[in-house]
Image (cartoon, rainbow, N blue to C red; front, top):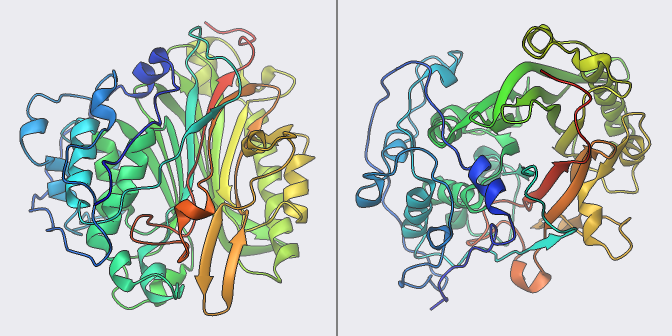
Length: 445
């Protein structure tokens, strides 16, 4: 039997940050959604988790997201109504306008544990603190993750050492939600999302997140039989902590040609401090031989980001009596993505040397502070084993400082069959860091 699963993700995070990032939200208007029962858990051949009570976030002092008066005594109703694969009737409706019962994240995490009780425990990862925590202003927890599109995992990617049973959506979705609930980011950037409307949007909305989804124009998921629609990028943020000022959906170009890759750029304002920043999520072209193509896509994205971070927004002018683009350097920026590029590629160098002044948060894990992790993805396909660094969290070095970075699991933790597996739902590891504004705002209010 495996020992009880542990969660140390918040142990190093100060209470002020936890309270700010764990607040719920109020719905805008009602819209009834269908309810159905949760799928039953299935038994798997690997050793199972412990039946003892898991040592999880319930033991920590964490502010609750929304009401939890009855959620601990019943199955979580939002999962019951959304995880049955019944998508919204109109995929073009603004799903953030629906009313979702506010959920207790601790109760939902326990439910994930219960559904996954016959699987091995999740990977245990600690944070590396880069500096002493400060209570003056709470950090912004950012999570970057390519979650692996369900259609691609089952129908195209060919993970030869991963049993198909481990990729079953009825349980894999709980592994994904468990990872998100473990770290509880303020900003969540996902790629390869092909269950946005029927799973991630409604469930995370009940936890206080507002979101935006941009599908690929010609998603490879559509070539898979019984697919759930196109995959794409999704961006979620804590709507109680941040106000959305502007959203841009970009279709990336390369060599004057429109491509199949997209990006979302959201301009957010912190409701507590008035600070404004941009968050971008993207997913560049995959596979070797496309290095120049990826570099061109990166150049186009950087150009778009330069324009978006130096323009003015009337919402800020009216409410804060200041122009966001009036500062010399523009709006601070966070860029998350699966770049499908090693640090040796030109697109990586483009981001490192861009006039936006970006740096990579995960270099803090290295001894010299200048080296990326040895891998963020590790998989075995028919063509062979691949261990690569492809995923990044970029941030404006002039505006942010990195407080903490989630460590990369060891080879022993990942196991000989690599990723995905019974205990981890994707072939990419999640990246999580805590960012804090390093200077006072120029002027607001």
